[in-house]
Length: 435
Ligand code: GDP
Image (tube, rainbow, N blue to C red; front, side, top):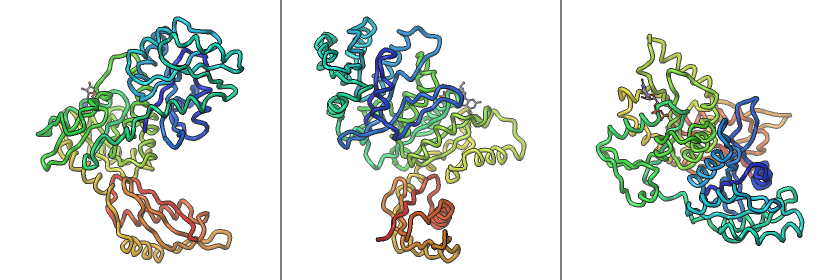
């Protein structure tokens, strides 16, 4: 999905516009409880084209002067976004900060759409011609508070989307990413994984365009791409150390991956942020492997691994399908087999179950655990069919979708997992009323 970023000085109405465009649909990034709950990342569509919207104004750097902060926001936008919406205040004219941002954006070679906010009435709108001097093309007067001009703005934004901007890799290439808080060892793991491989390819066809990803081939000739290796390795620039930025980067890596390696630091245990980002991977239907890294650094007795595993299972109940590996980037412990496991999980993610076999399993399940009755009405389950892979998605036809409660759906899922190998992969079961 293309990414659109909104950039501009504080207090010119960026978050109002953000909320108008994204609405109440999906919002993901929230601060820890107790801190401000600003939203910076949302998903929406216009003219049937889906995109993610980032409000870079929500990414704040504490203790830095305003101009450094805004420059960082502009850099994030340039790096992450396919299209940038540069917003200024039509009533205040062009300020010197606006000019500075414009210069940075101008050099980026990314499409920039200039939005003039607070054009609430016709007189204010008349000032739009002044803004041609920014050299960013036609300005679009809008009003966040009145909801004016957004349609024209969005028409312009989506007109810059490239077609299938996501599918730069062939389907036969397995795409995976590593996510986890700073210092869990992602970069060390990547190096170790690549170090174990005989062939690291810098030019699998069609991959050169996106140098932030690292392709390699295993001994059996299977091709892989590690998504956003650049984001994993880079550090040091001011904004890169902010938690929100790393979350944001992780979200876009997840989106482009088939399999997500969720990395936990054995020395620190599980933290709040882990759960937030990992659950996003789950919600997006990605296959997941949990890696407990720095296992070498832990003093162990016979129960240590079991206890750690127990803790993870309790904290991440929704990831009960994900294998847990205790690894070390330092010693290479259990990393050699990792690509093999990724491949196996990818295959189960892409498997298709024949309808006849599926329904044998369903009939057995119904016999084993009779359907519940709610308000004197009994759930009837007629038939199940797989409608998609990656992740495996099933439609189950019932007499009344209201009667298929979570617990029975969960039971059906478990029966599928018992009969077919869906290790590492979420399964979607969609109830539908049979007509
Ligand atoms: P990233 O921010 O997640 O990419 O983390 P890095 O790969 O930069 O690692 C952070 C620190 O942890 C570095 O000092 C690494 O040397 C160290 N580290 C990474 N993996 C391991 C490991 O398996 N064992 C030990 N003992 N240290 C590790």
